[in-house]
Image 1 (cartoon, rainbow, N blue to C red):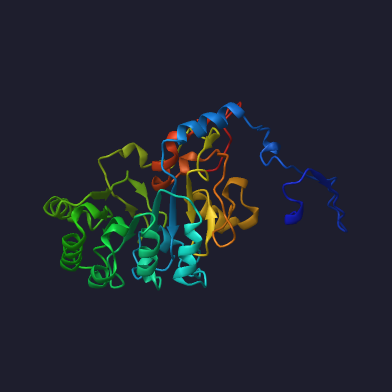
Image 2: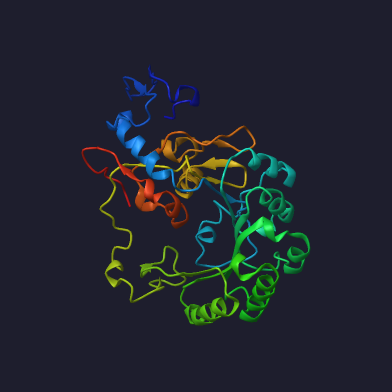
Length: 352
């Protein structure tokens, strides 16, 4: 049974009658969402978390669209394409996006996707938001990224850094290196970054990426290296994503094992939020993923906290989370210094 939304978050008992043999005495709804687990708010932990988070910038990551003009078999959005690629974008104009985001006071604005440049009006959005907060972006530098158009229409002052991810199965090295060179020459290496996912079959491009970064004096280089782990959706039975065989081979048998499921206060929602293509706001990337799967039945810290078109405002209190081991690198880089242990008597038994 699903408790109607109007009853959620209120202190009340709901009686249930059944015509069958199932007998339910009552359902209790509590305003303290973690009450059923025996977790109470810890004022000291809340204050410490907020203090730890105060030096970090207020950061917003906008997944402008889940659409992409590439199809990489190792992409996490491709492997669950029914949940991501087929989701529509908000039916709004670039001006409406700019106005909505202007109401949220942030110091960092990061645009990603999907491939953000397949969203119509992206250059207008970059210029509109960039006048207030210089834009960070990740792009695949594919056909939807017109370097000449960017040079002609985008004010360099509106950019912080655009990182271009190389996808060898979708684009030639010649095309990628030519386009990133033209962009860096026009906007400067200090506003340009490069990236490579170390998937089998493309690890031999690593040295070329490193050489190019030095030659163009690019601001960032991301070599996306992870430990050996079985692929969730391997191309063939028994194959795995052997990304870095010498980093930690002990993780091969149990790559997702963790002994840290104790709850912590996290500044996600206070100084970091993620926004999806519909304008719905989530505390973190994990919340977007779980929210898509479970909707209103998701755990409290995984539900949408509002919508940018409906007067959203940042939270004033940290989030109580017991799944920090799932935290994405993009979120963790902002919020991990805020993590403050909650004095709960034992680690919660969570499936991994």
